[in-house]
Amino acid sequence: MFNLTDHAQHVKDTYDNGLFLGRLVWYSVTEDTKVDYATFCAEILTVYAAFDGSIPPDLPPAPRYVDVFKRACTKSKKINVPAPTGGSFVRADGSTVVLPDVNYTKSNYTVRPAGADPSKVWRVIVREDLDTENHSLGYTELCRITFDRKDNSLNFQPILPAYSNDAKVEGMKREISEYYKNETDNLTAYFVREYIRGLLEKNMYAIRVRPSGGVYFIHEQYAPVVDALEIAITNLGAKFGSSMHSLPLLDDSKQREMLRAAFENESVGEVDALLGEVSAILKDDKQISMNKYQQFAEVQDALVKKVADYSDLLDQALDLTGSRLELLRDVMWNLASQVKVD
Image: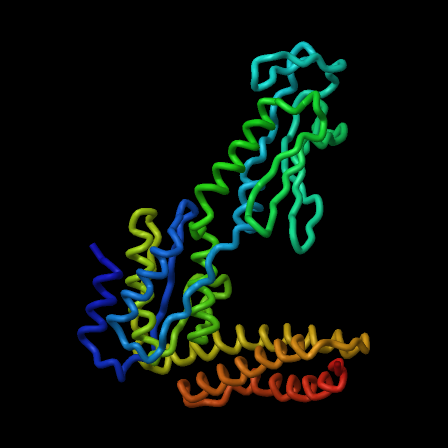
């Protein structure tokens, strides 16, 4: 049976690195992936130490408590809860609350944003009642949740006393508290995916060789970094089935043409997106901050370097992207006159 991992290793062992254009890289991070932040960073550093240390790894930032709180609120929602029979519901303490005539068939319990300032973030547990045809009959705010940024604490305050012990609300409060307590040091699947994507696209100037994404080309100069990252991600994801793989790409005319087309397709889109954003500011004659201008300039510089690197690699000018970069230079020059001076 053909094994791609074994084939990749065979290619690496058989051919000299000088015959490679670079690597094809792909990865899979399953939804149930959950990795402790300290463990993740330690694994990355340990594996990278065994490879070329000339390109040190960028470590991800630690999870923010407020983001964990927001995820906890989102995950606690209860959808399509049947309406209470007989116009009543049972509180968590076992007592019964008699309701007005029930004219709804089910309810959705969700948590909605309710404001934020530099010291606090507020959320509200809301019940939406629906009729037999899924028409909304209105919303009832049941409980306010306060996240204190100063000490990272949570506080629950009932809004309607009669519903203060609603079993569904109590369950949501419990789930939010437990998730927040247990997940504050963990990285989610989305976080891990974005970390890998950032390393590939921003640090290693990867290009997507498929329009839908998922498979990247990495210049051979980053091979030690790719090898280290491949081992680290596969080790960290062994428990959840997550993994990363790479395959050396031999240098021939067919592969060069494939890369040229993929690069032009991707880079033209990136330059056009930046051109569109900057042109809109110029058209509206808006002033921008120096920080915003520098952000645009950093993207421009990265695109210029990327074009130069791939032109050298492919031994040909990338005319389509190059012509757009010339236009971008002119537009950025004009934008400089609209930077606010403090």
